Length: 514
Image (cartoon, rainbow, N blue to C red; front, side):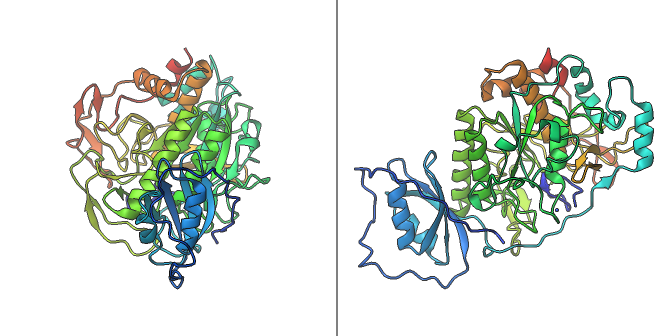
């Protein structure tokens, strides 16, 4: 995922190198409802709202019988401006400088289920840094790989231990996947000009969702000029073409789309952008989304907090709507080495857009978004030796499946002796990364192969096949820690045919095409 370094996962990759545009969208008119709408006092008698506070972004989740029109009026009376609305799920995105904006809207219970700020910092670019950089493939290693490539393999495929780990190399001899299937990469943007991505890129299903409004203008989905290579790396793992150039994706015959949700100059993914990403994918006929990030600024969103509760509600509505439209969501478990099934977790990194305040949370109440939402496939990471990657979060009954994410301590032999995952980076190059961010796209690729073989399968059926076909892996005796030392794997539990480290097992691309 994203949020890397220090055990974190921005874009859920451990080593990664990464002015909000508040454009207004047309708010659809909705017929008035006869149901009571709570406090709707006439604007002429209402006190003028305070607008001296910092400008923040909010999501307002409507009650079942409330209308967008009524919600817009309430938002304006409270000193807010509507950015966009999603009638399909009853979510409105708004901006306001009224410090009591959310409180005033929450009081109107006939209109709103929940209202919350999507951030703790004002609407402006926030600079962040991440530990580590992408390791660029050297010319010498590229030449060594090409010399070892067998007939039918891509030039850099010998370096892709990860494909062999899930039998994707064998699957390619049977089926590369269908161009009727598209995987949407909700991330930092995708460089569609890369020679390994251009053949499979779907511009008509790509957009920039930063700020909450989809921008589909040419190239809007590409990474910022000074931005992250994360989304491009993820896209290559999923669907790099088998065209005699570079690497191969897990599903090299399917399409890939880029849905950019990270803000300029940052690696922050806010709720309004992610909701836009899910809704865009749903309306554009995308079959699978890959989500290698967590939604900022909270590593865990606690439903006991009014603001965080609203973020969970908005994201839950968006993912459920997309699922009903036929979209399967795959998400990375995170790079914090946290047990997501534990009784408590120390979260010392939230909020990450201002000053973090350490807190102990219950992961059953405080959720990692979107990976812990119902219906989302949660993925842990493994290395070349098959152990859980030292950084990967885990959890019995939380992790669904595992896949290669790379591990610098689990190093393969020839040709390059690099335990990370090799994939595409902007500018036509290739580089290595490790993280649950890299594990997720392997699962998204296998899901795309399954969808290609079973075009009428629902998201829940695809998820059942992913689990049922996974290669069972028992809890290991040893596991690497963050120093590279082998320690007893006392944190791995097993039950119900699952383990906390691997869920139902490591995904199998070969079974997906048979």
